[in-house]
Image (cartoon, rainbow, N blue to C red):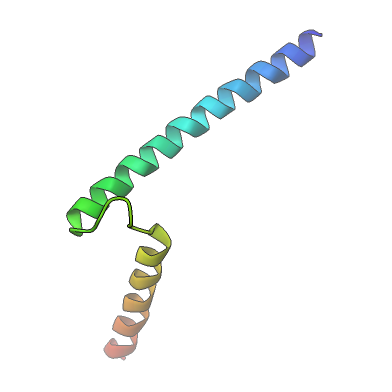
Length: 64
């Protein structure tokens, strides 16, 4: 039973840590949306990262 309690507490702690990380990511996403003058609710990080990747690829190609 002690092992189960320890595992349960570890799971709860990990869950709380994960929730904090998600909250931090969401806050940073909102800051990025504000910086880019985008709607906070519509900004998709995957789209932003894809755009940055494409820009990088084209930039490196232009340098060559």
